[in-house]
Image (cartoon, helix red, strand yellow):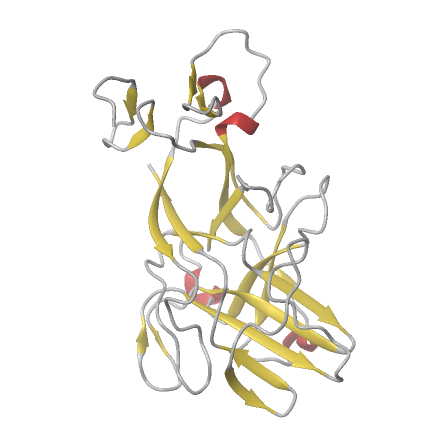
Length: 264
Protein backbone atom coordinates (compact mmCIF):
# COMPACT_ATOMS: atom_id res chain seq x y z
CA UNK A 1 0.00 0.00 0.00
CA UNK A 2 1.21 3.52 -0.78
CA UNK A 3 2.37 5.66 2.15
CA UNK A 4 0.68 8.76 0.79
CA UNK A 5 -2.92 9.41 -0.15
CA UNK A 6 -6.18 10.90 0.98
CA UNK A 7 -8.24 9.23 3.71
CA UNK A 8 -11.54 10.53 5.06
CA UNK A 9 -13.18 9.24 8.24
CA UNK A 10 -16.50 10.13 9.84
CA UNK A 11 -17.01 11.35 13.41
CA UNK A 12 -16.85 7.79 14.74
CA UNK A 13 -13.49 7.11 13.13
CA UNK A 14 -14.93 4.89 10.39
CA UNK A 15 -13.15 5.15 7.02
CA UNK A 16 -15.44 6.52 4.31
CA UNK A 17 -12.82 6.26 1.59
CA UNK A 18 -9.06 5.83 1.19
CA UNK A 19 -7.34 6.86 -2.05
CA UNK A 20 -4.49 4.41 -1.32
CA UNK A 21 -6.84 1.44 -1.70
CA UNK A 22 -9.12 0.24 -4.48
CA UNK A 23 -12.44 0.69 -2.71
CA UNK A 24 -16.10 0.85 -3.60
CA UNK A 25 -17.68 3.74 -1.73
CA UNK A 26 -21.41 3.69 -1.09
CA UNK A 27 -23.55 6.60 0.05
CA UNK A 28 -27.05 6.76 1.50
CA UNK A 29 -29.59 8.05 -1.00
CA UNK A 30 -32.82 7.49 0.95
CA UNK A 31 -33.86 7.05 4.60
CA UNK A 32 -37.51 6.55 5.41
CA UNK A 33 -40.28 4.35 6.82
CA UNK A 34 -42.86 2.72 4.60
CA UNK A 35 -44.04 -0.36 2.76
CA UNK A 36 -42.10 0.53 -0.40
CA UNK A 37 -39.21 2.68 -1.52
CA UNK A 38 -39.63 6.13 -2.99
CA UNK A 39 -36.78 5.45 -5.41
CA UNK A 40 -37.89 3.74 -8.63
CA UNK A 41 -34.38 3.35 -10.09
CA UNK A 42 -32.98 0.69 -7.75
CA UNK A 43 -30.51 -1.71 -9.39
CA UNK A 44 -30.08 -5.04 -7.59
CA UNK A 45 -28.20 -7.16 -10.13
CA UNK A 46 -25.20 -5.22 -11.45
CA UNK A 47 -21.58 -5.65 -10.35
CA UNK A 48 -22.14 -2.80 -7.88
CA UNK A 49 -25.74 -3.39 -6.79
CA UNK A 50 -27.81 -1.00 -4.72
CA UNK A 51 -28.50 -2.21 -1.19
CA UNK A 52 -31.78 -1.97 0.75
CA UNK A 53 -31.42 -2.30 4.52
CA UNK A 54 -34.54 -2.71 6.69
CA UNK A 55 -35.63 -3.31 10.26
CA UNK A 56 -38.98 -3.20 12.09
CA UNK A 57 -40.01 0.25 13.33
CA UNK A 58 -39.01 1.00 16.93
CA UNK A 59 -41.00 -0.99 19.48
CA UNK A 60 -42.68 -3.22 16.89
CA UNK A 61 -40.20 -6.11 16.56
CA UNK A 62 -42.42 -8.58 18.45
CA UNK A 63 -45.40 -7.96 16.17
CA UNK A 64 -43.17 -8.65 13.16
CA UNK A 65 -41.85 -11.95 14.59
CA UNK A 66 -44.25 -14.25 12.66
CA UNK A 67 -43.27 -12.82 9.28
CA UNK A 68 -40.66 -13.89 6.77
CA UNK A 69 -39.75 -10.49 5.33
CA UNK A 70 -38.67 -10.11 1.72
CA UNK A 71 -38.56 -7.52 -1.04
CA UNK A 72 -40.47 -7.49 -4.31
CA UNK A 73 -40.76 -7.23 -7.24
CA UNK A 74 -37.20 -6.69 -8.49
CA UNK A 75 -38.32 -7.71 -11.99
CA UNK A 76 -37.53 -4.43 -13.76
CA UNK A 77 -36.56 -0.83 -13.31
CA UNK A 78 -38.89 2.18 -12.95
CA UNK A 79 -40.88 0.61 -10.10
CA UNK A 80 -40.47 0.94 -6.33
CA UNK A 81 -39.28 -2.01 -4.28
CA UNK A 82 -41.99 -3.26 -1.92
CA UNK A 83 -41.57 -4.85 1.52
CA UNK A 84 -43.72 -7.92 2.14
CA UNK A 85 -44.18 -10.40 4.96
CA UNK A 86 -45.41 -14.01 4.86
CA UNK A 87 -46.69 -15.47 8.13
CA UNK A 88 -44.74 -18.73 8.52
CA UNK A 89 -46.17 -19.24 12.03
CA UNK A 90 -49.70 -19.45 10.59
CA UNK A 91 -49.50 -20.49 6.94
CA UNK A 92 -53.26 -20.09 6.50
CA UNK A 93 -53.20 -16.43 7.55
CA UNK A 94 -54.29 -14.07 4.77
CA UNK A 95 -55.20 -17.16 2.71
CA UNK A 96 -51.55 -18.11 2.69
CA UNK A 97 -50.55 -14.90 0.91
CA UNK A 98 -48.10 -12.20 1.96
CA UNK A 99 -49.00 -8.73 3.22
CA UNK A 100 -47.31 -5.29 2.91
CA UNK A 101 -45.20 -4.31 5.92
CA UNK A 102 -44.00 -0.88 6.98
CA UNK A 103 -40.25 -1.00 7.59
CA UNK A 104 -37.60 1.46 8.68
CA UNK A 105 -35.19 1.39 5.76
CA UNK A 106 -32.33 3.07 3.98
CA UNK A 107 -30.88 2.69 0.49
CA UNK A 108 -27.15 2.69 -0.25
CA UNK A 109 -25.82 3.23 -3.76
CA UNK A 110 -22.33 3.25 -5.20
CA UNK A 111 -21.06 6.82 -5.19
CA UNK A 112 -20.34 6.75 -8.93
CA UNK A 113 -23.99 5.96 -9.71
CA UNK A 114 -25.47 9.00 -7.95
CA UNK A 115 -25.92 11.94 -10.30
CA UNK A 116 -25.63 15.56 -9.27
CA UNK A 117 -26.13 18.97 -10.84
CA UNK A 118 -23.32 20.44 -8.76
CA UNK A 119 -20.31 21.71 -10.72
CA UNK A 120 -17.84 21.51 -7.84
CA UNK A 121 -16.78 18.69 -5.58
CA UNK A 122 -14.11 16.10 -4.87
CA UNK A 123 -13.73 12.94 -6.97
CA UNK A 124 -11.39 10.12 -5.92
CA UNK A 125 -10.32 7.65 -8.62
CA UNK A 126 -8.94 4.14 -8.20
CA UNK A 127 -5.82 3.11 -10.09
CA UNK A 128 -8.00 1.62 -12.86
CA UNK A 129 -9.77 5.00 -13.24
CA UNK A 130 -13.01 3.74 -11.72
CA UNK A 131 -14.61 6.23 -9.34
CA UNK A 132 -14.11 5.38 -5.69
CA UNK A 133 -15.87 8.43 -4.28
CA UNK A 134 -17.65 11.54 -5.55
CA UNK A 135 -18.46 14.12 -2.87
CA UNK A 136 -21.34 15.45 -4.96
CA UNK A 137 -23.21 12.19 -4.30
CA UNK A 138 -23.61 12.92 -0.57
CA UNK A 139 -27.18 13.96 0.18
CA UNK A 140 -27.54 12.85 3.84
CA UNK A 141 -25.54 13.78 6.92
CA UNK A 142 -25.75 10.17 8.10
CA UNK A 143 -23.48 7.40 6.89
CA UNK A 144 -23.58 3.64 7.54
CA UNK A 145 -21.18 0.89 8.51
CA UNK A 146 -21.45 -2.82 7.74
CA UNK A 147 -21.70 -4.75 11.00
CA UNK A 148 -22.14 -8.34 9.79
CA UNK A 149 -21.19 -10.24 6.64
CA UNK A 150 -22.82 -13.68 6.48
CA UNK A 151 -21.20 -15.63 3.66
CA UNK A 152 -23.28 -18.10 1.61
CA UNK A 153 -23.55 -21.52 3.22
CA UNK A 154 -21.83 -20.53 6.48
CA UNK A 155 -24.95 -20.60 8.67
CA UNK A 156 -27.98 -22.80 9.27
CA UNK A 157 -31.24 -21.39 7.90
CA UNK A 158 -34.40 -22.56 9.63
CA UNK A 159 -35.73 -26.06 9.04
CA UNK A 160 -38.07 -27.95 11.38
CA UNK A 161 -35.39 -30.58 12.00
CA UNK A 162 -32.47 -28.28 12.75
CA UNK A 163 -33.85 -24.98 14.02
CA UNK A 164 -31.76 -22.03 12.84
CA UNK A 165 -28.60 -20.06 13.51
CA UNK A 166 -28.98 -16.43 14.51
CA UNK A 167 -27.64 -14.12 11.83
CA UNK A 168 -26.69 -11.32 14.23
CA UNK A 169 -28.08 -8.28 16.02
CA UNK A 170 -31.83 -7.69 15.88
CA UNK A 171 -31.31 -3.93 16.31
CA UNK A 172 -29.29 -3.67 13.09
CA UNK A 173 -30.65 -2.96 9.64
CA UNK A 174 -30.56 -6.08 7.42
CA UNK A 175 -30.15 -6.05 3.65
CA UNK A 176 -33.04 -7.73 1.79
CA UNK A 177 -32.80 -6.44 -1.79
CA UNK A 178 -30.20 -8.82 -3.22
CA UNK A 179 -31.17 -12.21 -1.76
CA UNK A 180 -34.82 -12.33 -0.66
CA UNK A 181 -37.80 -13.25 -2.83
CA UNK A 182 -41.45 -14.23 -2.72
CA UNK A 183 -43.33 -15.99 -5.48
CA UNK A 184 -47.00 -16.86 -4.96
CA UNK A 185 -48.74 -18.77 -7.74
CA UNK A 186 -51.78 -21.08 -7.94
CA UNK A 187 -49.49 -24.09 -8.30
CA UNK A 188 -46.93 -23.23 -5.62
CA UNK A 189 -44.97 -20.70 -3.61
CA UNK A 190 -41.37 -19.81 -2.88
CA UNK A 191 -40.42 -17.53 0.01
CA UNK A 192 -36.86 -16.67 1.03
CA UNK A 193 -36.27 -13.99 3.61
CA UNK A 194 -35.48 -12.90 7.15
CA UNK A 195 -37.42 -13.23 10.41
CA UNK A 196 -36.74 -10.73 13.18
CA UNK A 197 -37.18 -13.20 16.03
CA UNK A 198 -35.82 -11.27 19.02
CA UNK A 199 -35.42 -13.72 21.88
CA UNK A 200 -38.00 -16.31 20.82
CA UNK A 201 -37.41 -20.04 21.16
CA UNK A 202 -37.49 -22.27 18.12
CA UNK A 203 -39.30 -25.62 18.16
CA UNK A 204 -36.18 -27.30 19.56
CA UNK A 205 -36.23 -24.98 22.56
CA UNK A 206 -33.11 -23.12 21.44
CA UNK A 207 -32.80 -19.36 21.93
CA UNK A 208 -32.73 -17.48 18.62
CA UNK A 209 -31.94 -14.05 19.99
CA UNK A 210 -31.43 -12.41 16.64
CA UNK A 211 -32.80 -12.59 13.11
CA UNK A 212 -32.91 -15.89 11.26
CA UNK A 213 -33.25 -16.71 7.58
CA UNK A 214 -35.33 -19.36 5.89
CA UNK A 215 -36.33 -20.62 2.47
CA UNK A 216 -39.73 -22.27 2.14
CA UNK A 217 -40.91 -23.98 -1.01
CA UNK A 218 -44.28 -25.61 -1.68
CA UNK A 219 -45.75 -26.93 -4.92
CA UNK A 220 -49.03 -28.38 -6.09
CA UNK A 221 -47.45 -30.06 -9.12
CA UNK A 222 -44.09 -30.73 -10.74
CA UNK A 223 -44.35 -27.79 -13.15
CA UNK A 224 -43.67 -25.09 -10.55
CA UNK A 225 -40.00 -24.08 -10.77
CA UNK A 226 -38.09 -23.51 -7.56
CA UNK A 227 -35.83 -20.49 -8.17
CA UNK A 228 -32.50 -20.34 -6.39
CA UNK A 229 -32.15 -16.57 -6.61
CA UNK A 230 -34.61 -13.67 -6.41
CA UNK A 231 -36.63 -12.65 -9.49
CA UNK A 232 -34.54 -10.73 -11.99
CA UNK A 233 -31.36 -12.65 -11.14
CA UNK A 234 -30.16 -15.92 -12.66
CA UNK A 235 -32.55 -18.83 -12.39
CA UNK A 236 -31.66 -22.09 -10.74
CA UNK A 237 -32.75 -25.35 -9.28
CA UNK A 238 -33.46 -26.15 -5.65
CA UNK A 239 -31.27 -24.46 -3.08
CA UNK A 240 -30.02 -27.49 -1.21
CA UNK A 241 -31.30 -30.32 0.95
CA UNK A 242 -33.61 -29.61 3.84
CA UNK A 243 -36.60 -30.93 5.76
CA UNK A 244 -39.50 -32.03 3.59
CA UNK A 245 -43.09 -33.14 4.03
CA UNK A 246 -45.02 -34.30 0.95
CA UNK A 247 -44.97 -31.28 -1.40
CA UNK A 248 -43.28 -28.65 0.77
CA UNK A 249 -39.79 -28.19 2.12
CA UNK A 250 -37.45 -25.91 4.06
CA UNK A 251 -34.09 -25.59 2.34
CA UNK A 252 -30.91 -25.68 4.41
CA UNK A 253 -28.70 -23.65 2.11
CA UNK A 254 -28.90 -20.01 0.99
CA UNK A 255 -26.54 -19.17 -1.85
CA UNK A 256 -26.40 -15.40 -1.37
CA UNK A 257 -24.39 -13.16 0.96
CA UNK A 258 -26.39 -11.45 3.73
CA UNK A 259 -25.33 -8.11 5.20
CA UNK A 260 -26.32 -6.03 8.21
CA UNK A 261 -25.53 -2.40 8.92
CA UNK A 262 -26.12 0.45 11.33
CA UNK A 263 -26.46 4.16 10.74
CA UNK A 264 -23.58 6.24 12.13
